[in-house]
Amino acid sequence: MQAEQNKHHPTKTRARLAKILIAGLACVALVAELDFVTGPEIAFAIFYLLPVGVCAWFGGRWIALVVAVCAAIVRVWFEVKTGRPYSHPWILYWNGGVRFAIFVIIAILVDIIKKLTDGLQELVRIRTAALEAEIHNRKEVERVVTEISAREQQRLGADLHDQLAGHLTGLAFHAKALAESLQKRNEPETPHAEKLVDYLNQALKQLRAFCRLLAPVDTGNLEPGLTRLGAQIETAFGVTCIVQTPKDPPQLGLNRARLMYNITQEAVRRAVEKQMARHIEINLEQEGSHLKMTVVHDGETLSEPADPADHDLELRVMKYRAETLGGEISINRDSAGRSRLICNVPIDSDTAPFPPMS
Image (cartoon, rainbow, N blue to C red; front, side, top):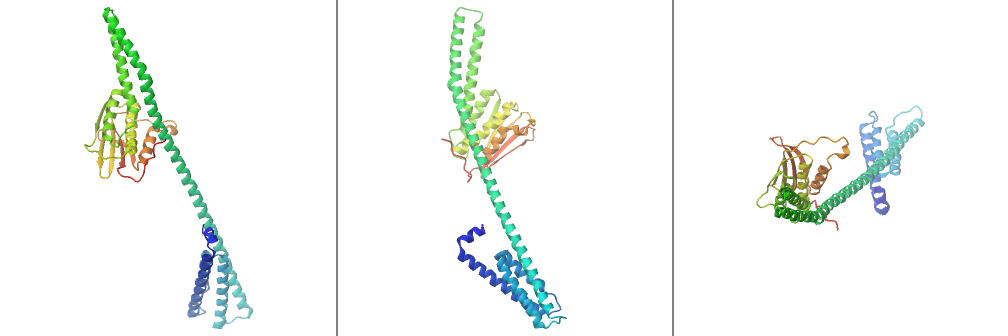
């Protein structure tokens, strides 16, 4: 990434390399000064590697080689200046060449390590971007699937109400006419016909309650929606459902209220259909800047499925919806041993729920 930026700014690159070279030469001069002060008895040559390595890391191989040449020359000059005795005059230059070779090797190695590090960082950046894109795509798929599920649920409720409920209404009307005809003739089958009419009317009532149960909340206020949900659950499944909400619940907006309603709806249906609950309590309360929805019931504990892929799809959908609202869902048991599902979401959140699909 730095190399790409440098291609577009050659003037800035040359200025930066010039500054690195000047800093490296200044550091060599400082080390030489310290080397001169400490005298020939204290080995100080290793400290020349510091400017060479720093220049190789920040300026590249060629800047480091220039600094290495200067460091080797300064070291040879220092030994000449101090008059260190050698058995042969060429030994001085041999030692200088060895030091220069060491400086060059260090410069090349540091430059290689720098390039490998930059390559690794770039690879990590690419892999991270790919992972973020995959997570985004997966969340987008989950969003679409969740929205399609909600729309199909709504469509199913409308189809049941418009078609099956109409057929049951007609059937109940004919059964009632038959019961009245049998009653006029004092036929012994009259009680059975009247019981059939009662069964059909009860089935029609439950069907309509179930259709309304599938309908989404139509306002940003959860209180009427949850109250209606409790009544529809009692009618459709024959259970006890108690709803407790604040007198003046906060307004969440239509989309956020619908998501919160869908979470509650799914939790209640899960309790009735999967956990065989007979007594359910829905509690909605405000805790500071958060809205807390609790569903408590006396249902059974769900066993772990054989296939992990089948693990409680309803719960996964509820958790995704809660995350969309910027909240979370937890499941535990209360002091009486009853199952308890808690959904805690912020009332005002920057996490905007997905818009309705057109």
